[in-house]
Length: 557
Image 1 (cartoon, rainbow, N blue to C red):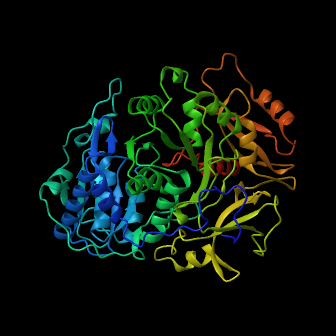
Image 2: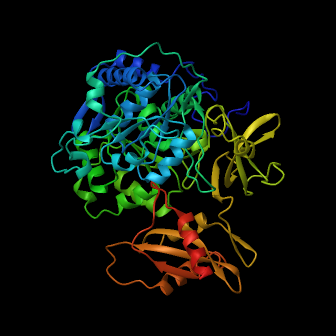
Image 3: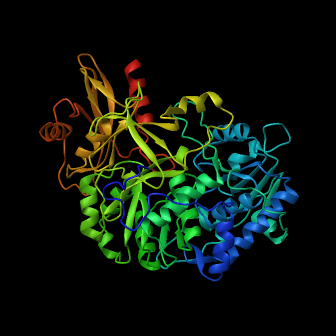
């Protein structure tokens, strides 16, 4: 962080933040001592107190050590939907001095096999709805799982009036198989773990990258790096123990993990957990539990404000909304503010940085902006070929140096070398994101380094085109990709989901004509294709690479 305070830095905050030099589990100890009977987790209408959370995590740690043979530094898979069990298991793994490997619950058996073989995990926490995918991977052979702790969501689920939880939440316990121990049986053994020995610089969690440039890679994060964004978020946003947060972002992803688990635990806040996104259930939970804080992504907010029944819910308790993943369309942000009176506060981070390196100042946010670098982060925009700095408002690659940056990729020194560059004697992470910085020190995204469309020599950044297209009154969602063109080389194609309440039909030609009036002609889509939905990742991001690959496949036929 520069010696001088950047413009618009929150006046009450220093630029340096001293981090706790402890294992992350110590936060559970402190919260249980301070607020033993206060609800930490609310699942539909049932609560887990801070004291219960700590005690159950300790019992699971004892089970891992004494029944599964988990030793310090071992990796343990965590494969569930958002739930109290996901959160307790995470801290149970840490209390056993082991390393959490969070896995996307959308992953198939073949995809899981890579995580098991790559991480060397021998134990998995899995929910019963996902257990059939694990069965082929349990056995005695090298590279297979030996132990599966199977959780049943209904053990922790309450009932909220007017809400029917999904079937996978209400299902009764029924899983049996080799190596299987039920969650409740593991707790009932009441096995206590040995001493807590993992320190701040030991491995804590290994989220895997999305695998868009090859097989997913494990990002090695220590207790110190995880503590950095967990504690930093609490201070930056001014959280208090009386915060009630809605946690619906997937916790296997670093944004949901930090904002929905680790930060609230450090701050003593209450978390209302949803296992899956549903706009009506989210609105009802906000009203029922008086939610004040909601971390989301733009695709959720687009869906939320498009709900024709939204006026039926009392949203007056909301005081803060924010998130990242993709730029918030201005039209959607404006609609959100009209409904709630709240400015959406955007941030930016990666799996490699365990969530945020940038967040907008809460009292001075800018729309479609990544924010400013937070505590102790040195972020720069550089030429991706020479790594020389570029002037304000010129596009380059964003590189970051800070305490939240990973140690490297697990067992992949070549990928680690490619991910980092030394500038001015500091080790900077190459984000692969193109962006620019304004005169106030706010960062903005242009696009992914490899996503640019080259149309007749003009550089087109799809994210910029998407942001402008959200202003069209008929468009609910849009993804812009490149399509082959005999004359331009590449041309701009938009896949569009129309709002369901459209009273009159809208043609592709009409949207193309509107786009040409709204943006430079070389940026405007030449092709518009209507689709019922856009594919999304487990963290809710639109999977533009999948759509781009489909388009490339068409061109080869």
